[in-house]
Image (tube, rainbow, N blue to C red; front, top):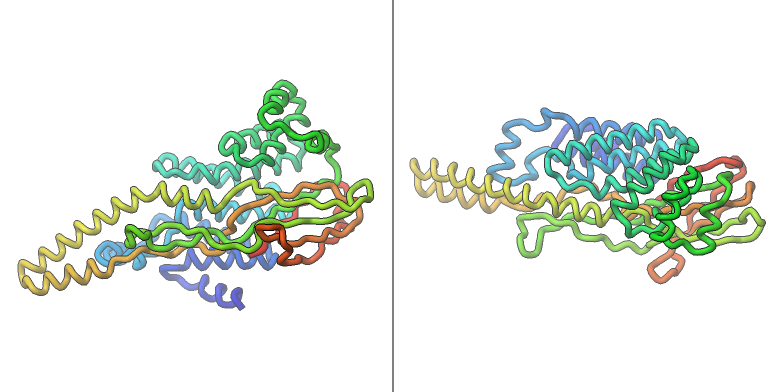
Length: 373
């Protein structure tokens, strides 16, 4: 039902078209229609980059009344995540060259935002991580090591990124670099054995967990929006499978990137720019009201009250973003079924996902993108 509604809304020109395109693309991705999802994400990416995006009348209305009268251009973070979403779709479709194109698009946007003094570095860590995974597919371990190391340097709080970095450096035979990083990450004996494993029949589940933060008026400044974390019942997933030794094994997903943390940080970094726009808007309202007062004092005062009273925080945002991106890397028996369950904060089972049949996934690296909202 949501897909049908979003398809109609996203096809209409209007102030919220970009928002509906992003929501529609996410909904299609959740429903595993990755091909159509990418058609929508690529349309959203194109729309978000249009230069002539707003009419003068809309800008004037937003200045004198409220920002919801202007076409939604997307937050900095959302513009970057469009390409992350498209890259994940291409990975699921095993179109790895196209996925790498989307990562390059992220880097292009990243450099553009840096020139505009926008603090968008948080998402770039996941772009680097994703490129490391893609270099592994082509067995270009030098490039994979460089990408994983760049991701780990940007955010050292995710240990699994460090383990993937060690794996790539080991396979690239970058022994000195491997030894230096080994002391920093400190893998367990079991993790060391996995790092030095043979690179065959590995499966990687990329899990988009939960719902990301939502905009709300700031308690101290209700005319300004801020992002509030969403409550999510499911915090991670467990998988059970037969491993190469024909034993049942259980693995848990681990976070490699917090969408919530990066979105909030990027939103806060844009706070000064929003404050400057609001200050300019208040000055413009005073000028317009004063011009009216010169002809009719009462009417000018009424105009001032109406313009100020119309001010409110613009609470539009991409509501289907995940809270985090998690990874499970494992080596199953060549022919087996993977059972997946969603776990709550205290490891209680809350949701069971359909089993994955790996009969056709032998002797190669396979990515599986899964979502629980």
